[in-house]
Length: 384
Image (cartoon, rainbow, N blue to C red; front, side, top):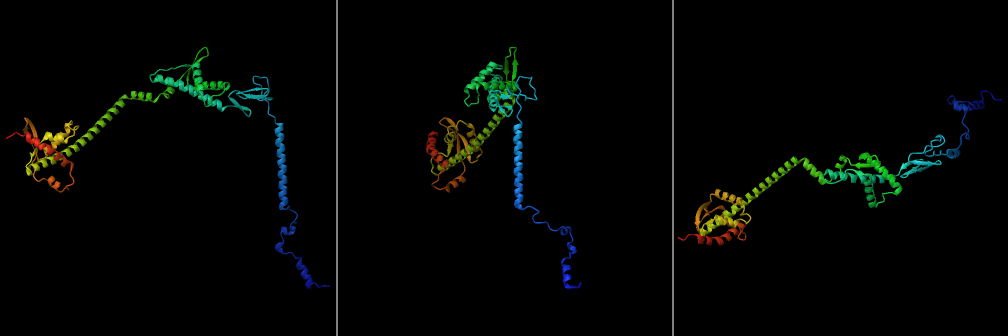
């Protein structure tokens, strides 16, 4: 028999002794068994079974609702004795017989209602546009002072539509049964913005309002009427434009004339200087030149008609102290002579420094003049 103090008894007690730190509810209840929760594969199978069962239930419910909910038949058109609880009222623009719906011409069935056909709308819009253009253009011609009509009867409207219907080749116009509906809607649209006048026999006449006819006036008519209403402003603008044009042209002509006169003045100085030097050195000819001959030699034929140009040249010559002017009787006529009085001028020195192979236009003109004029001047001088 073992004693209480034997090692085997102590070991056995220590083996079954529960520590204080492990005395929790989980520790008291113990760990769950491995087969308590399903595995991942079993859980996915369960979800698949639930999804299939739900889909089947929803499908059967939807099918039974479709089979059980039959639409109510339509009430016959024109029969007010039928109960509304048993049948459905026939929709607008439709005709119902024996519980079935049939849409009128120009309308098509969409579900359980009748909607307007797009072809009908386009045809009605085309008809109203044709009639509006014809009626309003005729009124616009009267407003522009031309000839035209103001009022159009329904027969005239039908003629306009038939003419354009015959010209139409793009397939916009519909068949005759639907075209009547389109024409009726077009007339309803026209009555909304055209002036109408009804008679006791049921006929109507149509007229384009003046405000709408103003938009159909041609461009030339609008321009003429605007000018007529603003005639004072137009006159002021035209007079101002003419004045500015005249002033610009006069200023340009004055500048061109001044530039041409200065150029001619330089040519006159060079010709007189060359003539004077030749008369002194070679003792040929006369040192003077007749002013009128020099004028006709330098000016172009069209420039001789403008006396202003030579007057400017004469004014420049009179201001030059190197040129002397005096009258002389030649062949019984009094002539104004021009003579170069300066000696050794700067222009002659400048000519000397010029290359021999370069001859200016002024030198050529003076040479040509001296070849013809000196002998003529000698013949015109009185013999002493």
